[in-house]
Image (cartoon, rainbow, N blue to C red; front, side):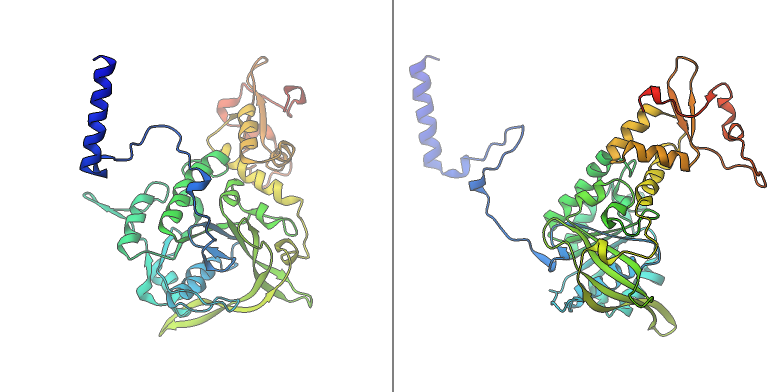
Length: 401
């Protein structure tokens, strides 16, 4: 086709499209990176479920040591407030909404629902994830795999204001101490919260030790859990001015609002229904200060927190057997652990460090527990039988680790 003929054809096609309307002008999507110009976006404020504590469309973390009532706070007090449109602990009013609870640790019938009822919640607005059904039957819900199905179920239920995931680590496929794997696994949760305009509250534990340190750094697993969450809440028991114990729920980190302040709370046992007892949260006064200042305990062992976290990391990365020291170091960096801290944690765990022959590389291995009633542990006895030819020794600094 000559140039003049092509120009005539193009002009005729344009005229035909114009005459038949814009229905023939679909927005053609080209593969590649999608960019949005600032002029195409409309600035909007953060939409809060609980002002400065829980934001719609965002992921949050609630962390604390065992026994601090994290699930009672989340699936009890907070969930009940949402379902009845009640008042938050600071007196602000909540818009009524549905709550979805996905728990892999507590039974809904004998634990979660009684706590929710004890908190005064509306049972018609709370839903517990029971599993995934297909042609083969019902199988357990896996947050790391079934997030799309959960989004569909939430829409069918009329939407939700709050989704509780206990524990949040269940959404991670792979090693929860690896930064990249945690970020990749949590992204569907982030996307679901944004698309569904609900707040996600993931529950997790503190690593051992660390009172007096930054509570955000005590969240167990990779630092990515705290990094992905827009708000990190912490629940802890601390020593009061008069020596009495008191519990505080505090904001430890926030990328979208104030990151300080807290609220005192108490746990009590009540009769939720005739013959059914359950724990319940009663709120106290609001308190001022950073989470680190509010949650300081008499036993201040902040220096131990990173080492305890590094020890958890080592147990995870070495659980399948001897692992190259180079791999351990690379994964420690990926997980955000300082190498000197990892080495001290390795000493705490009595990690076996051995060389695969004279020219081979160094390998790390978890030590077996020493025999009972042994006063002087023999490291050689702890090495697995298949490593008898390996050289067991202290770590060689010349290897560059």
